[in-house]
Image 1: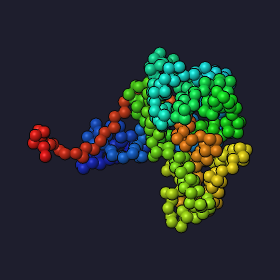
Image 2: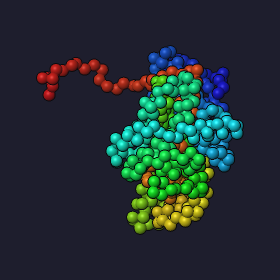
Image 3: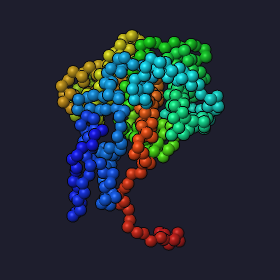
Image 4: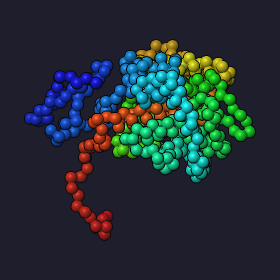
Length: 432
């Protein structure tokens, strides 16, 4: 981040103030308003913070117009082709790709921390059977701070390292426990000889009566989705982790808050909405082509779930990466499902029709993730759990970057008060 010599001039009535202009690595221009209130008494108003930069970050870069996403400067396409999820996690958290020895140590440490404390079974057992897996995961992530009180200081490097390793290692176990509890099946212990994703799949789908060996194609598809979702700038959940982390809460507490933010339908509900859309198409007896033509005729773009993106203008680079794997998975698995047939027919129709391109309605990562998760056998209420597993390295990286920032301070947004100026107190007997 390079400071520019230029200044922005702001006039409020007869008062004038010069504000520093800062420029990012790719030429992004920002106006530093940190001294605005002190100098003028005024604040800015930006509902949703869509025009507000809350921090300087070196973790990921999004080019909205070109459709590019890079982690620590490395294009997501290269990472998806060459790296494992744990290697990408190391990159995001530590700032550079690991050496062979560093990756081996990181991988070994993660494998050694996969078990949950046995008392966590009682924790899950106390939850209602119909508890949403995301609520269970958030509660369990926060509860880790009660089991591991030896490593909660966010400013102690040794504490941070072991907490990071514990959280990455235990999140698949937590996710699988949340699912198993919801369906009344016994919890499965981790098998550390399996890879990160393979271990998660066996904990989800194995049972004491039947062993489960992950299909390599399925394992690769899920790993790609985790990689592609591992960071995406200052989205709602990432900003939440930073905001909560600014209170100096431990990593487990900050990530628990991030999981709750991600659970909201406005943040990560698209893949579930995709499944609902496909089910609706099937119930109406339509084909994917019929539905696409219906959307065109009515101009009802909101009905087309999993297409377009609020950030990317032309295409979602993550969708381009996962599409071939999605097709290979369906072909390899030999899945014969009307729902998936509708999905791929709809995808092909939208991708080939100039109308949808003109309206910015390109398939996004949520469309393909819904198709893949459904094909693999994940219930729709676990889709966001998988997203949380993917987001975890990015959340950790931002939490760590926050604490390393020399400008660290507790987040404390201002507000524009619009209530009564002053109201007299009325006793209870006088209230109508």
